[in-house]
Length: 211
Image (tube, rainbow, N blue to C red; front, side, top):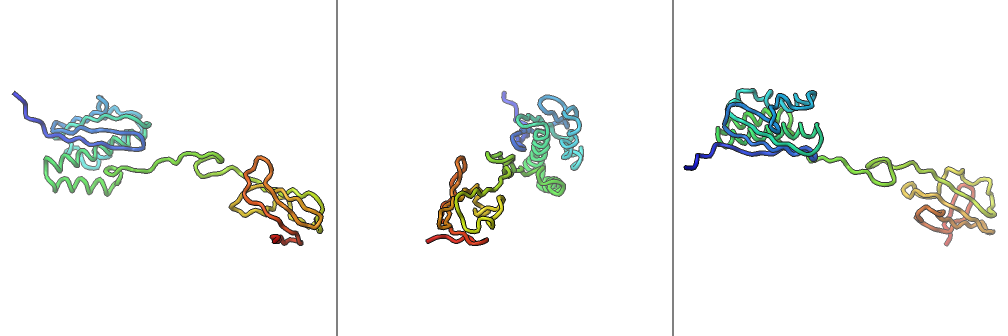
């Protein structure tokens, strides 16, 4: 003879790559995480975070349910946040399905008012590092250089070595080679990506594009 199924719901919580699944059913207030009582949850310094739903709502609301939680993935902090989210979602779902809508709304309002992530997953992820820099957005420092070769009228008035003719967004070193007429062809030296070439004439502190 088949036994009548118990009132039960199953909900999950996520934080980064950690996933916690909570099976909540009618019971006597037991809460276990991976087979151990929640009171023994490690690390101890983060245990209070997992207890937040219980402390906010009160033990009386948990007295009539048992919760079995399985958590995997991520690190210690991510797992704790996934556990507390799955506990909160499971209790709200249980009260909505088997108790009454009014108590469910009361519980939900308390949780959302304290911290919205108790019921809503946080989609933020760490942006991966890219080549060419120390991190996701930071870039390695780049210096600018102009090397002048050949004859040029007013060569003594050329810009200093740290001044670049290249646009700020086109960061590259530039090699200027002047001909006898004072015209300069500029190139990106070996090992640096070519961004632009052009023929320029020089007047003191003014550069003109040749036709």
